[in-house]
Length: 328
Image (tube, rainbow, N blue to C red; front, side):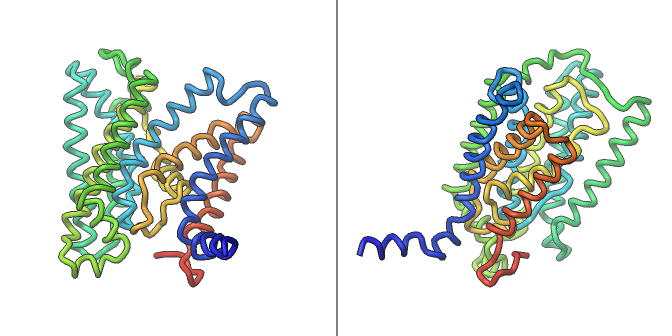
């Protein structure tokens, strides 16, 4: 009888239900063990002071973005303008701070822009009956164009802070505290409020959610605005780590966030299986690969190839429907 019960517990249905969670926890655990063993053989442990500092700074920015994007991805949506937003916000914060001496003013301007973009991205899809990725693609091109114009006018490809000590943003404890506070806030909203439950319901079945009385436009707008606020927070730390911004700041973050969420077990179609832990686990896994693979002698171009292969494998394992077809 006990063997029969065990078989039922670890049945095909059980693995289908918990496969994403197993992949997320298993991936980060494997990376920790693997790089703890291999990196010292190549001269320096990944847990040495210098590498740990690099790892934490890499994790924090990506995790802030990924956790902030949980609501959007739980809806079955995505935003591919995140990278350009980070770049523009970092540039604005540096430029305004240098001009006025006020870091807060630069941050407030970025928050206003982020809220506007969030409202447009969240509402456009439902009102115009197009996928939200289309509006975010437009913003990606527009924001990229604005950044290019700014740097062309300055005659330089980068701008540095001159009137503010940016080293506070490199403080490990500050970065960790900000991330922990964000995770706690998002976890509470996502798991213990009506908003989080309805967001997952929209991702699971938007037609059924709308017929149940859920305002799709309202919830999508709120989700995108929440993400926009945390994109500004991530831009502050990205800018603060070097005390500067450039025309390449934020490049690739939109894909890094998506890869991190998938590595953590987030289903592409969103829905009830979406979890905040996916963002945290995936960010650590992605950053461990990013820092650890070059340490064991893997060329940078090959690192990207390995991450792409892992990404494809995880998608095929965790994001397939019962009939073997990838979600929409």
